[in-house]
Image (cartoon, rainbow, N blue to C red; front, top):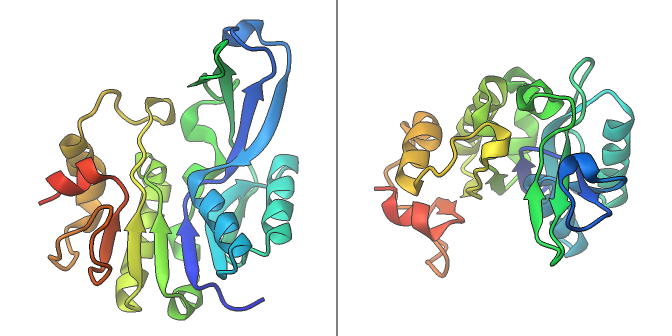
Length: 228
């Protein structure tokens, strides 16, 4: 396997979709788990398209974590940056579905959102060698809701700047992950992004269709538009 050209940092988890449509969480009888987590999805999709990619995130030292590592390996994603936590479990998200098939995030079972392994990504365990070999860094934003993983994101950005990586931020905020509900884009930036971007070079971020020479790409036009 070649060195990862793109590093994807953030969460990997199981989305457990309700098999019975139109039922609230207590009435669901069975669930089907699907591997998910936007940064991990990006890494797997890139390797399928022939681009070398690596995933950096934290999984529990448990059976779901083992299954997700095997999925990454099968997709030929570099797992050098995968951390395993001995106590915190791998996150499983329960998703109910309406009769029309529309999804609704229904929580994490018996666990609180702050108790899962993805929140424990450790900044001091990030491999600088991975960043020295890469060209692009892809970040989700759910990790910014938790102190340990937010510190790891900040460290990843430091390493990306040191090694001149192009950076893409895929903006995603959901109240079920501990982020504030109905938050406008500008407030989201001020609360979650500004603390880790205060030392960035003052280059205007770009949205869809912009020229690729800028160092920072934000994959959400409403946030990009209000950034400066």
